[in-house]
Length: 161
Image 1 (cartoon, rainbow, N blue to C red):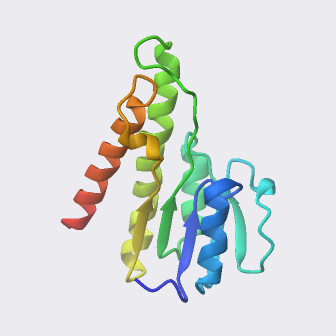
Image 2: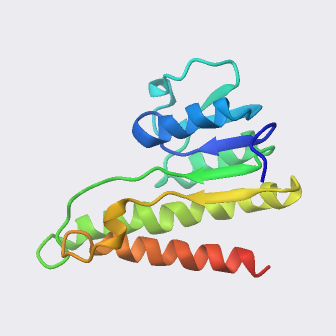
């Protein structure tokens, strides 16, 4: 897929690797980048092609609103996430659920909201960004492995359609 002329949406675009995705998409010629964050005023990339947009992985209404505004998207970059550091064996289940709710179900919500636009806009791509910790089996990182595996299943299901 060509990035030149693409219209991208990046979740978690207000800092770190998300902000770098925005910068690199612009350098490669994306015509528009929706830079999303829970608090869009924290998006600092200063370029007229950047559209800051509210999107919280845990808030269905914000995801739906973002999908409505960004109905022209052709590249979806799922980057947003949290780090609780929850230990699978000893942490309260609420912490483990927060990780899974964000990384697994939050990402799934975003994909489901944007697939109709991606399918109707021609050539499109979904990029799911994962931490290197998703490849390391530790009590503190097991939820990342679950997240990685679920994102792989999501990817495989999209490819078979």
